[in-house]
Image 1 (cartoon, protein in one colour):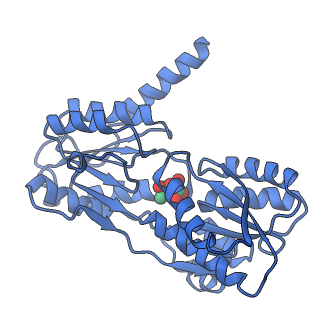
Image 2 (spheres, protein in one colour):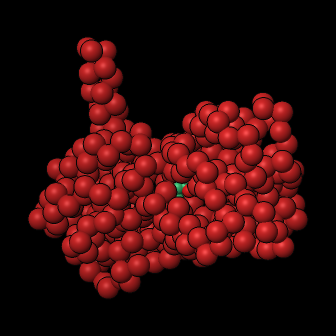
Length: 326
Ligand code: GYE
């Protein structure tokens, strides 16, 4: 019991003390024309290759923009993000940006920021707050669209077949916008044809380890899996280990669709172990810093900024692999 509590306290403290590791000094005149803006950024965690690339993008572009960054890692826990945001309010930062781990439960802390007159930018993931005046803009991908693209590939792949197609799904973090939306977009497209059946669907928390563990369980209880749809590359890569461990060939015995297009995912796609990847760009840093500067100056910004993304087949992955930035 004590151990559990102290682990929790420690996790909280880590979230709080990690706030100082950004770029630049504190206050002062700032560099690079940033007019000494200080941004408090609360990151989801370090759960995937996507997240690592996103963190680097935010930190690098803050430096380039001359914005002082206070950064904290919430280890995929909402309570750590709320603590970090409260600490940024206390520190009177100029602007708060965060990537909400789940969609619900933000109204109270966002109101606290608004009352303190500290503007908030949502980046990467959305919140479901009804009051949209609680944040200035939301910069990130259209996750429903990503799910639809995954579904469209599948519909096309099986267009000449009348047999049932048994699908297993590895969902992202429960309650997160990308998990909710990638599921619903995919469902909407495949739902038009009754031959597509999702026979098992469970969260793998966006991590490789969980993806492997859940896929092992899927394989044990379902002998006839045709397709795996994983909400990110990392879970797909973990699942590939489980599929190979069960003596099956990923990409052939079981077709695999994932989302993100990070380097390791693209390598597996080029190697024929994944069949299709829907891109989701983590390189949000430069746009985030531009938006932050405008918001702090009091300029109008669009309420929604959608990232541009594409998709990759195995052939396309072979062509672009060497030039991928993340
Ligand atoms: O797809 C996944 C990460 O929110 C878009 O979070 C992001 C997702 C990304 O852990 O790999």
